[in-house]
Amino acid sequence: MPRATGATVMERLRASFPEASGTSLRQWLRDGRVRVNGTVVRDGRAAVGPRDAVALGGQASRVPFPSALRLVHEDADLLVIDKPPGLLTIATDRERERTAYRMLWSYLAAERPTRRPFIVHRLDRETSGLLVFAKTPAAKRKLQEQFEARAVERVYVAVVEGRVTQDRATLIAHLAQDRGLRVHAAREGREAITHYRVLARRQDATLLELSLGTGRRQQIRVQLSDLGHPIAGDTLHGSTRNPLRRLCLHATRLGFVHPSTGAAMRFESPPPAAFARVGRGV
Image (cartoon, rainbow, N blue to C red; front, side, top):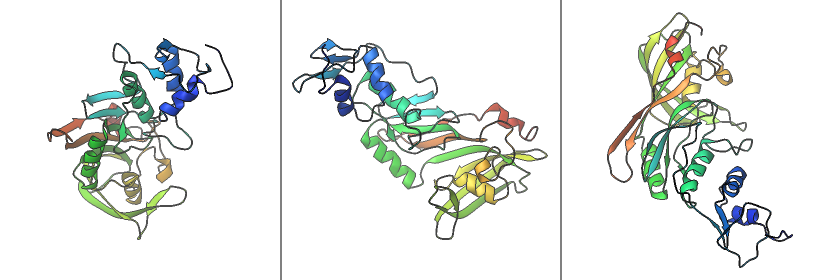
């Protein structure tokens, strides 16, 4: 196909699939999934006219699930994944390509170009564990309504510095976000509620199970730091030790009502085995 200074195949693809990353578009071209007037085209610089039909064909078999993620559950309405530490949930100004959202978008669109994931909630980059994504706008709306109503079960496991003396307690604070996006306690902030119980104690660290009463950004990290027991590896909130070279916070349990069937759904992801060695090198 000749090249020209007008519209190109890549430009048409970007216009038709604005949420696809450049990496995904180039992969579609390499895989021979892009057709112009029914003919496979692999050159994104090829010129196309206004009457040319640029289409994306499906694949005969389902593409592999992204290796960086663990698929816990998938049905027609949603996906539940296990996110590793170090991976963003969704793009930021500094990182737009390597996110859980982008990986799932490519996974779904590879089977049907019009499919995409919908963000329901997030985990910090440094936090590992369970995340649910919707596959339809209706599922997203119904799931988010549950989050807003505080009807979703969200349980975490964390390794914190020092010995927490109370076996269980409820932490209540008001949190605000400054211009630098840092979260801190503030009288004018929004209420944050976290319930915890001690799972194990060592000489200089404690393993905690934490249940969210609210879902404020970084609430567990800020509240534990204010308690005097920052999460191991959380240098942003006062941790001085990082034995596992990661933030020791894992979303271990997620429960909600299925947006279509109304069935109770509950998923679990065991915390990293290294968390159980709390205090031996913390």
